[in-house]
Length: 243
Ligand SMILES: O=C[C@H](O)COP(=O)(O)O
Image (cartoon, rainbow, N blue to C red; front, side, top):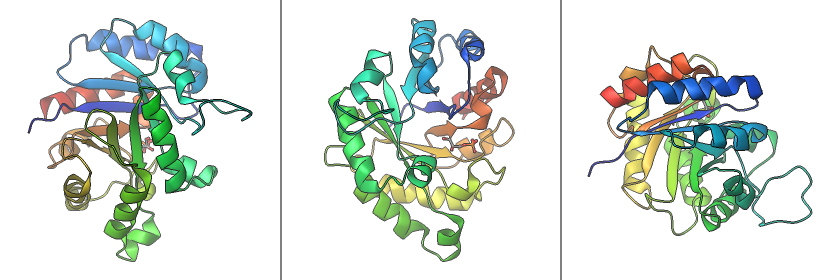
């Protein structure tokens, strides 16, 4: 089966209006890539970025949504609002949300349903902590997160899975190629649809991208820090295209 690759950037809580030029430079450098490119900016930049990316190769996504359609949830954003602002995707269950906002896998599953209902593609994040890896619990943790975070009905069309070891995020540390291969093979085998794209995330940069993209069952990356600069993210996109 041929799986279309995806280079996704998560800007997290970074980016002001002036940084829209980075997305524009990325789009200009990759006018017709043979893969999908996604940037998930902070909510404040969603609408202007979606407008700036119209007609380009770059899709735009949110970083979280509420599980409810609408209502009294001060400060939250619904999936329909993301879609209305021009998003096609939404990152859900990122470990920073799980840690900072106490999100459980059940919460992530409810948000995933909401995302699908609004026509968004859910980019669902899973990953073990360093303590869990050291205890030999990686696959059981990932297995439980996978089973509990994805509601019934996940397909290659509506869902992307991102494997992000918590200890590799923003640390400059990455798992070995064998460790990534093991988790991705597990996800390919256990995901509800074998066509669901599997991204690796955690300290991906222009230097290590080609090595990571050569690993079996890695269909792309969810990139944090290195997605903020068009030059760096562009180099990662090129490495993925050449993989
Ligand atoms: O969503 C992205 C990941 O958390 C990776 O972040 P990072 O590339 O800065 O390590």
